[in-house]
Length: 315
Image 1: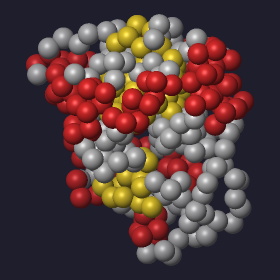
Image 2: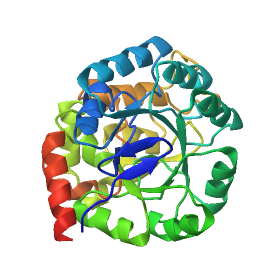
Image 3: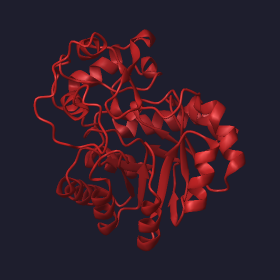
């Protein structure tokens, strides 16, 4: 199989692979630019950033690539509107958003002539997004890392979404290799979004300790955590997760009010920042897709693309 280019709105992408927007600060300019340079879509995770930080990352990425660069901003964050508008003003190529969406962001995208691509977990939500003006949708299933919007497999939801919409449909969740890509493309997807595989790359901003945790992971290490966001989160068992599970974790000492709604069971922002900054898994929450155990090497983005494309051809 040979992959076809991906068309989203006015964008034409040579390789139909979107790198997941992994927050907090895993997907930054270096990773996004490396993916864009390989012909895919590089994504900067704006969640957890201040507006000036996001602008700086976008500008840095533009210095590193002439490829397609997008941002991913979680609808749940309090600064959602300011971050999206700042990215649009910077001329970002597309905006990806999950954990719900506002009608406003579609109007902002139309005004800026920029593609808005929501992450959905049902055909009903996908159809609604298309009516509101989405240029494409990302269908994410229970296999994905991070916050989950469904307990259903992406491969079960994908056919329903394909029947419900006419815009491009991107498959996401549990995609690790070229065989996975070929499978969902044959099912009708226009492209794929891959997070965990790129989190375990040389260019990823994750700490070396976090990357090693991915390499060492076995299937049984993947667990669900009750996130303060109000959605279940999927990641890897570690000492911090054990504290959460036993309700013996350290309480929040200073709330930065980063979310529109928060249960305050623990500080999700601190826990995710610690994952990319430190190797202290007593304080870090490590999000991961359920197929992380299939990743055995930390590779450069260039090496990952070469391997993926070879595997797709073989598939």
